[in-house]
Length: 115
Length: 115
Image (cartoon, rainbow over all chains, first blue to last red):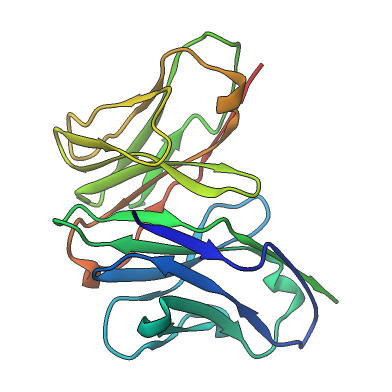
């Protein structure tokens, strides 16, 4: 069965610190990979996505993620976080099986950036 | 504006009551799905549909029914609400098997409280 695991549940950083959020998935076939962000009181917004090609994906607001197929990982990074990055971050995987791929989410990581 | 529209935004139910959460999209997406979001659990897939007339169960389908009579609408029914169904519900849609067309579009959510 398809599953997603996010390593960190709660991360606290100071402004300008570097960020890396871990995401591992379990699925043996073709996948699409996503990172979503949810700011307080708002709905999900897409940060970035990987479908194919270059495994290093750049998204909005300076975020990037690297797909490492051998490790089944898709970690999210940002060189220097800002207070406005305080939010909850979700990794999600869509596995393709008979063209009925389901989007499955990890548990989420709450990021708190201190000014 | 194109997107996913969810109604209502807030709802309070008594245990045992029934209700329908509405979801509509105007992007001609084949794939629609319902998630519930609970603290520490991420988003969990309740039901999904790959097209009109076709629905399937997700990770946590018990207590919920769905139908898909049109491409645009995907209502979620709670037949007999229970306090365990207190949650925030999100509807999402996407093109079915054309990942190059983009990721998923999420509605703004319905906050449901069952007392």
